[in-house]
Each structure stands twice: as structure tokens, then as C-alpha cells.
Length: 362
Length: 121
Figure 1: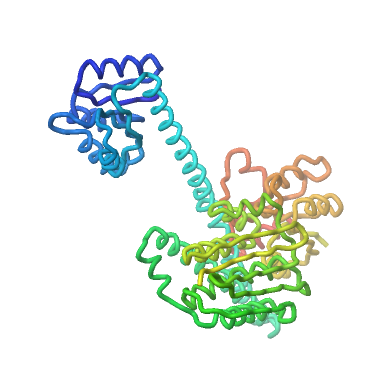
Figure 2: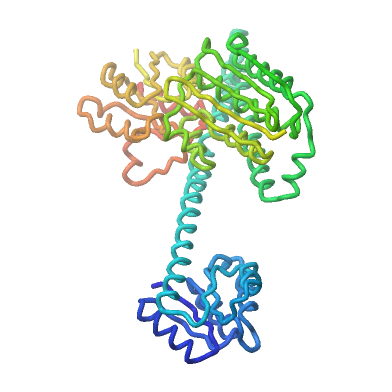
């Protein structure tokens, strides 16, 4: 049953509210002042608090401050009951973390609908967190070990074979086993680096001064950074002839390292999801206020649902279940673009290909 | 000559297993999808199946494919070895169902010994 704590020093008003709430099916705890209210709060942790503002000793603001200080209870909905209607007072309460104000005198309907709104809001937030947490948990418990162990098994397996057979193995075979070890190591290395980069981005994205710091860098010739990054990837995939570049240049506010990372990850996906021989078309344009880049491949593409699933958590799943690492690289690129004030858009059709369009402010 | 079916969607893992099986006098067939695995299992009736768990396709995986083979009267005698990078949780229902459980990264020698023993039988 939903538990509501009513902190109100006027006994008549308190009883009246408690009767109303009990009649509406809530479990109600009454407290005659702020001090008792805080005490009941700690002991019973209610689902919602109704609290008078003006009370002797511990007033409503002090109660709210104490509740919001505690990490475990920062999200418990808190509604002030007040005779005051000054906007500046309301502001003060909202800034401390109040969710709503109900002005006395109020009708039963007004009180109940304010409560319902807050409870609904809390449930929506809770279920959203629950979904995200579930996906993250699944990722850590299930997908991450899989993705780490697979290339590690190539390294250890080939090393063990080399050790078993080195004496009798032809040179060519030894070399190809060494290649497999290098390939496994490179795959593992890239995954670990991307994980670290992703973690760093997530930490950074909650820190304003670090985000501002990102914009302290400028690259003067974006086109040359793009063509270098594309050339490296084309070589890696052995597809130098599949690339068409049509680049205009501009100066943009981003570090060389971050811009390269964005381009590399997006180009990598274009190569990965299209067959050798299919063209990858990269075009950039300088406009008055922005620099836009379009990457088009003619590969396998995605349907609408798959494009939508490219959210921060789902894409991990996709990445791991399909073992292609689309998700993590794409997430990193997307987050970096957004942190630099840019935008990314995807248009894709199954078996027709994918167009990724990004733009940065200039 | 005994036939071994390798079911694994990862090409590099297939390659590693082929090289490993070079130590035995066996014929090797590979499948990267559940549907191919089932088709090859009934066409060739291999002597041992090495089964990965996480395979493409949202409704099927290595467990369901292994179970389908176990439930088929023509195929249920084929020994199945589970080889997977996910945490293999053995419970009372799966523990004795399959002839081997190997988590990647596996010891090549141990897996070879397991296969060798099954091929000899």
C-alpha cells in the first residue's frame, strides 16, 4: 500500500487530510511537527511527503533539506502545503527539491490529483531506470564476458597449438598462427580501449567544466583529418578503391584526437557492414553556421526498429549478440558529437545501405 | 573417418578449432547458424558436435539447437560438447545432458582429449 507522511502542526488540518487520504486508500502517517516528521520519515521511508511550510522549530524547508541530503531518499516526492502564494517562496522550495505546492485552502480533489501526479511521475522514472539498469546488468553479466573471452580464446588457443607443435610445424604455419594471435590481441585491445573511452565519456558528460574544456581545442583543417582517418581505415579493410571523398574543409572546435575517433568509428561501421567492392561515399560541406559530414554505404542497412535500438544500452546488446561491435563504436561517436554541440542522424534501409549525417557548429 | 561438426558464428574460432582438430584424423564441417547446424546434423550425422551458445538469430541459440538434436530420434545419440564464451550455468537438467562443457578460453589439450575419447567410442 502506498505510504504517505503528513507533516502539519495544525491538528484539525492534519486530521482532515489524513481522513481524506485514508478514504482514498492510502496508508497515512501523521506528524505534528517537523522534528517528529523527520523522525517518522527515517523510520518508515514513505512513498510521498505532504508537508506544511510554516511550523515552529523545524520548518518545512528544513525538513525538505534534511530529506534531500540523504542519497536514498532524494527521489521521494515532496509536496508543500502552504498558505503562502508568493512566487519567490515557491521558487525557494522548488530549488530545494520540492515537487509541487498545494495552496491552502484546497479541495480534496486538488490534493488527491497533486498526489496522483507525483506518484505517477515517480513510477515512470523508476521503471525507466529499471529498464536501463536491467540492460546494463545483462550487458555486464552476459555480453561483456563473452566479448572479452572470445578473442582471448584465439590468443591462448593458438599459443597453445604453437607450443605443442612448434618443433614440427612448417614456417608458414607458424607465421599464420602468429597472425591469428596478433589479430585476437588487436581485437581485444580495441575493445578494451573503447570501453575505457566510453567510461571516460560517461563520466565527463556529467561534468560541465570538462565539457567546456572539450571546446577549447580547434582543428583548422577538418577535411585533412577526415581523409587521413578514412585512408587508415580503408587500408585496414584493404578497400582503398571503394572510397569516394568529396570534402570541403572548415575549422571546428574539437580536438584532433576526438574528431579522428568519431570519423574512424563511423567509417569502420560503413566498411564492416558493406561488402568489398561496394562504394563508401563521404562528403563534407561548410555552411554558414555548421560543418556537415555525410557517410553513405551501400551495405546491409538496418530496419526502423534496429535504428531505434541504437540507444545507449540496447546497442550494447546488439553489438555483443551479433559480435560485430557496431554498438560501442557508434555510441562513442554519437556521445562525442553531442558533447561538442553537434548532431547525428541515421537513415537506413535493409539491404540498401545506411546514410549517417553529422554536423558540428562552427 | 569420423566427422566433427563445429557450430560457431565466429570465423576466427572456427579457424582455431580446425587447426586444433588437425591433431586428430577427422573430417571437419563448420556451421555458423542454427539452421545450418540442424541441416548438417541430419544430413551428415556427425560423430561429435562442438556447439557454441550465442549464435545469430533472436529465437534460437546453441542450447535450443542442442536440445532439438537431442530430441530427434535419428540424432539423439550424437555426442554434443558445449563450447562457449558466456558463463555456462550447469544445472541438474543440463548437467548430464551433454558430453562436455568448455568455457572459452579453453585448454586446447583438454578439449582434444574430450573429443578423442568420444571419437574412439
